[in-house]
Image (cartoon, rainbow, N blue to C red; front, side, top):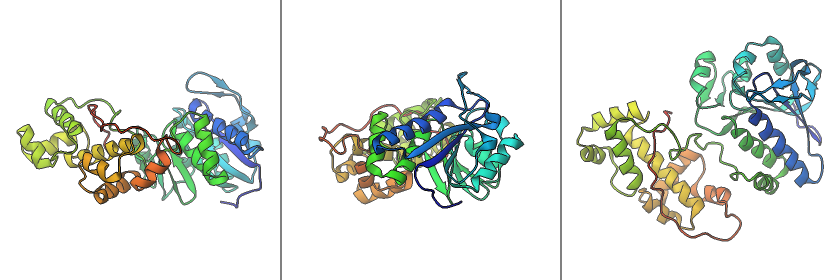
Length: 347
């Protein structure tokens, strides 16, 4: 990769037939708003396609390319390769792959959104790398490109200068992280507020929330156990206690959870407690010690360790950067979530 160029930063977003429109829009809209807050043209953004052809997006809308990919030359600041169901054909397009490889060596920062990671992988740009992608395509891409370690969990990550992200709206999280690196945290927060979006999820935050994931566990015993876990986070939720409550052996309960939920009871409990703590950190003014006790961690240090493992940041850092009330007036305390948790994806 080459050194950063002077402002304005040249940004190219690479599209193709059946690309995801939201992948493109999240990038271009965030960068345009960043320009407005910067009070200057900080980013010179263009959408490019092979032959300059209009991009028939997967949603059926037609997007006019602004540049012919063949005519794009470096140096570039950033190249985004977006995702979409058309990535399957794009990975096998030698012209598209060739131009992406050519531009990669002339670009300071190479990035992909969603299944765009598969296109980078097809060009050999992710060999030996860890890469984020849409959770529903990670297994397929792992089989297709065994030299790449695809991770279905992070929102976005950077490995050796190449940034990759999860699906669709994760493009916004990745772009906000770039804006923060380029123009500062305050301007990035202003962009996030203008777009009425969550204030920058940490890159290591899991793609699938345990409080919104689907479908629900089909086995009645697992369903009852999950309900008990999520409504009794401060209780004894050891596998032994849960097995006794369910009237089965620990081994059988573990086998049922692995089949139905994709993870062991212990790991499910830890995730549920950590996510409940995340909700309380950003939704209340409770102390970290109080939150740790309410969510069943016992001590603030145990909560800190669990948080670092799941989100890659400390609870205090998460609260200071993710709370929608920061900076601003404090909010009233609320109880921990009691919503029935549905089955989380394996991983």
